[in-house]
Length: 508
Image 1 (cartoon, rainbow, N blue to C red):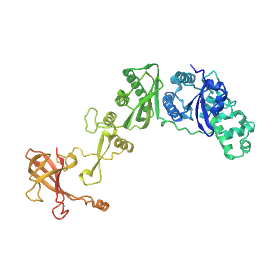
Image 2: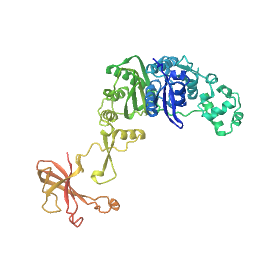
Image 3: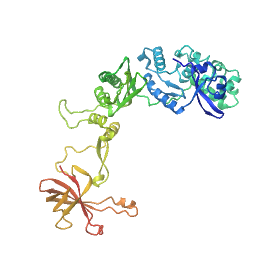
């Protein structure tokens, strides 16, 4: 129930405290934003005031803008006290445009928010109707399709979102309503202004409101490629119901994608709660997919994080990113098993559960130093790049050779070992690794690997030049195979620092 006591928000201005906003009772008494608090208090001593918090207001407006995404994915704030929503293709979910406007107004009013809604073919006309064309006893006003010109003709020129100087000049010229600008020739209207910039501003705003000039709009989020939604009369609370309707939306979106020969790359499921809040979960796919089962399987991984609160009354599933879906032959003959399977679905599931950086693949790197001969990359990014280029950047050998020149397992960093050798340049006779002594029964090598010589050109003062490595494959008395190397040579390289031994890898 509205307060019967006049109330205003104030902030410091050039001439002391000035009013920035008022409630209905204060407005009825003639108190207006921009008025000095001292003057307002002189006329109405019972006026209650509080400091304005513009930053908190902005945050609250952004939260509200996220929530009104239930009425259309393309939306954003409009100034300091407004929102715009593109409801193209959404009204049918609410029973038509009038039912949608009723729903917006009733929900916002139930949150304690005073609202005036305008609907028109253009953003400029909707802005004008909401702020200057809404009747006092109504919460919304709508301009019929293709009748924007007549709908805003009687509105004041302030409705065109002009600067105060433009409005003042128009009124001095006797032009108080938007419709009065229609009959004046463009050249004549421009000549009446002292500045060409002022004339241009008026014409641009008029053309934007009438739809003769496109007005750039930047939504809060990039618009989805395709979107499907479902509204509920009774809010959903149970996880089973949410999962069931999410599955239906996935099937609907998959069909829409397939009809356009597209596959989703990024999915976003947004749920709008009955208390005016919202949340979302997302899933990414390495290759474009319109497989509904795969989509819902990825989203299910995130369902435990969904909080229905007091109930979810609208679900929307967006294909945020999409691409051409390429046909992939998984097997050569129907029913025949093949090792050449598409790993993308498995990668998507693992990434959805553990995160993008937890699932990686190895790719060759142009270096013959073992620890630099490969790089670890996010698997979903690698598969996505290969999918977009249609050419695999790397194909491992298949089948793998029985005898490997390199160990299947490399340590994260070589570990120092204590070695006994018959002759300094010979392979080890025995060695101690992790406090356990191992006797060598067989050795093969050495394989000499020198560091890249050009790296020594960039050594700083006091840094040591890279040393040569001699690698050996060795087998201990228990049949385990190791890959060890001697770091440095005995023939003068680093004579002041004798060679040391390291274990670098293990053979399977």
